[in-house]
Image (cartoon, rainbow, N blue to C red):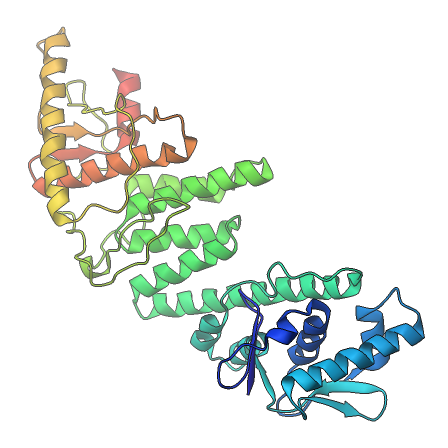
Length: 397
């Protein structure tokens, strides 16, 4: 069968794979073919009245000129595609012969409707008829926009169903990949971002969950000039406090974080995961006056390309411990009262300050702090205090 691609890119090929360039070079005649084929040609042809086609593709032409143009276009398509592809029903209707053309947009809809969701997701390679335009045909343009929006919404529903199904069977990596795709299709949607944040947390990468929240906030402010939905901030708050139900995670499902909005490498499930947390983390306990506060807010933030693995986590933990000890020595020299001795076994890691001038990197300071805190916890040498307790302690001190 002739293959017609309309999702993500436009292409038309013979059964042997060779492009039908003559049709691709004629936008209006290609648009006529797409419109006829989109309705589906199996199991039986779907016919369109010639009068409706005239109004759709030649609205400004008089009746005689429009009919002549349709006749010429039909003859051209039959010659380029082969006899028997464009069929008539009486003198007033045109359609595509059954099993003559396969259209990816129609195949996508049929697969999704029949419950073959994985197949449907693989067929959707992008928007319907991207950057395709013909002049002087506003009704066709409106039809294209409606179809584009409808198919995109259908695609998103398909991904959401697949993501929830993956979560139900415990496939954390697949669920995370699918929620990323959902957010890519609807970056301003609050529900999608919340689901992605929870998926990151279940995968053991809380820093990436916080980064997803920050990226979403930046998009909302830039494109809508509005504040982020309170539910995003509430979930972000819970993530920082470590109170989600997914606190215990299988280490084999840990995946790298998304480094930036522009660069998103594919997830490699075979990559060694981060080691699980074994440190004696103190969550929610207020700092005493003599507790150590290893604060890194004076350093410039640098972009990170992926989450820290086991080996790098130990390195970061050692480095952060050194920072903590330096901070302890500094605080010892500044502590006026000997009655409040420093407690070197308790450490606070504060977010790094972004001094690059690029606001898109703000979230990386928090990610770095989370990684340092995780590295410290893995050493099992110190207790790491959450930032909210630090704020309360700072006010008391």
